[in-house]
Amino acid sequence: MLFRQLALLAALLPAVALAQRDTSREALARVEETLTLRLEEGGITLKDVTPAMVVSVSPAFEESRAWFPAAALQTLVRVFGSAALRSCEACMASRLYVEEGRLEQFTTALGSAEIIRLDENARGKAPPARVAIWLDETPEGVSLRIIDLHNSRIVFVQNFDPGLTEMARTRRNFTLTEELERRARGDSLTHTFLDVTMYPGQHVSLDWTEQWGDTNANLAGLSVSIYDPLVGVGGSYYRVIPNAMNLMVGGKILLSVPTAIASGISGTPTQVLDPLLTGVFVLRVPIASSNYGVTFTASTNGRIGIGISLLNITALPFLP
Image 1 (cartoon, rainbow, N blue to C red):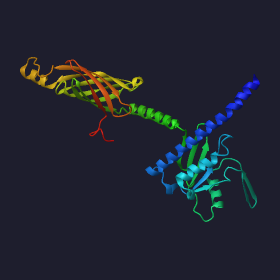
Image 2 (image 1 turned 45 degrees about the horizontal axis):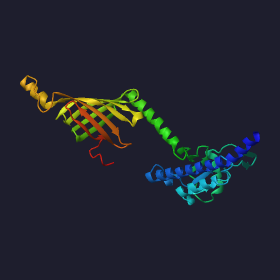
Image 3 (image 1 turned 180 degrees about the vertical axis):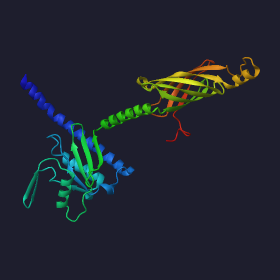
Image 4 (image 1 turned 90 degrees about the horizontal axis):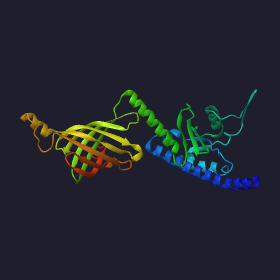
């Protein structure tokens, strides 16, 4: 039994190592894409980070020891260019400094002062390195650090995996923190909905709603209708169901302005075009992550319709 387990483990190890290599390759691709975007968008300025000293391109697995350093350097060369990079082979080895009456040996991780000293000893007449780069392999992918050598400022730091799941997780956590801070400040979170249903019945209305509740699943606010009823004003409430494609279920109570004016002038209840009050049931289904949705409405006036909703629209919702 033990021999069989050992044989199975030996058979699985190459597959695990190969999977790890694929993970690291994909993570390096994400590094290249991210740094290229930062350079293009101005988040990182090339003249501020070059020349750059590559301090470490350390593999995390024996299987990747032969190929990872070269693959990591290739990634950096494609981003910054070969003329802008310097490889510090002595950075990861024990350092021995001999001066008159003094002998120093370092085996710990490098600090900025040591990197600058190694750069001074090796660069000749070339300009000094501006930043130091660590691009190391991790079990999930790779880890990148870029540090300014002159003031130890962190220029860029991030862990990369093939799907950038850690970045997405960080963004979700930050969004949650931002939302809790918004609630603490009492700031509003307003949404705008334009509902247009045309078949078989018609209903056109514009809603301004405030998002509230412990899970932000409630929306309530003002609604103005243009049709069914014609020129109506009232209130609306919706409940968001995240587990069902962010479905919104709710309704609105609308006061017919023409009927209300006619009733006030005559002193008796008078119906003009529409009843004084109209209730409208609304069901909205957002389309993916766009600003559009499918809408179903049913009013107490007997009109049922299917159409579209424009969610959080601008003046021209079809433009980005």
